Image (cartoon, rainbow, N blue to C red; front, side, top):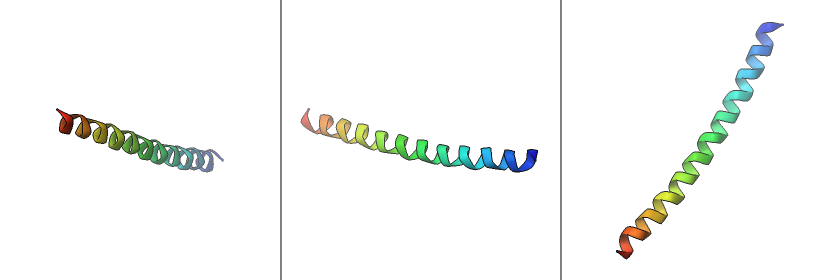
Length: 42
């Protein structure tokens, strides 16, 4: 029963990592957009 448990944890962890990566990319894009707008203003 240890192997299925490990696989379940891995699956959940992978899903969480994927969501975290999506969130980070979203944050990066917004920061990049703000930075570009600030650069354009100067």
